[in-house]
Image (cartoon, rainbow, N blue to C red):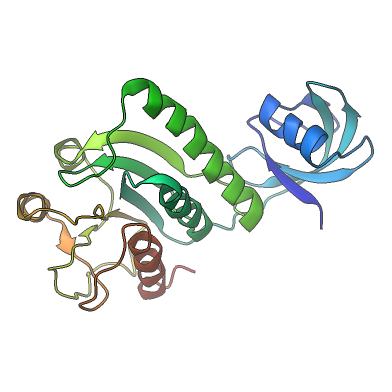
Amino acid sequence: MSRRFHDDCAFQADTPCELSPGPSHHIARVLRMEAGDELVLFNGRGGEWSAVIESVHKKAVTIRPLVFHDLDRTPGIDVHLALPLIKGERMDYALQKAAEMGAASVSLMRFERNEVRLGEQRMERKRSHWQGVLSSACEQCGMNRVPALRGPFELADLLAAPVPGPRLVAHARGSTCEPGGLESATSVTLITGPEGGLTDTEVQACRQSDFDAFVLGDRILRAETAPVALMAALFTRANAW
């Protein structure tokens, strides 16, 4: 099976394209691929290309797209995930699994009990890293659309903005519910909380903004586990796989 790579290039059949530094470095320096090697490319706007490497240089790899495949492996419902900032590699895990599950977008959230506090410069570096995590996850799992990464936002900002579809919030003191309208919904907004959970004030604010509780039984899931478990439950109940 050919290796898959994400690059923002507007690919056109039989038109050589120089890949951006990230995939170029991975192809040339990490995988040590050579001219003539086949690969698969996608730019995040749907579908993917069979392609061949034309040349490999120190700083750039040039490829030639051959055939476009109109494949869309995303689920039948767009899940817009509002994800807390989580410590260390567990944040990478949460983002990776959100991409593998097919999240349409990820909004980074600041909650009252967030244990992560980042300054502006560190946040920019982290955002760049997290965007790479999402891209790499899509390369690995076969998704052709990389989730949009947004924020970080305060909860009040998210609640004040128009959000698509049914609105769901996960919290430990919620009761299991069966959200209505999932079978016909085209999108869902799902808020998951931080390591310390949502405060009563935050839960109340979500309820006042028409967010319904959505949990899996009475056990408490970790901040990085809840998103993937709840997304799986949503896709199953919406018959969106």
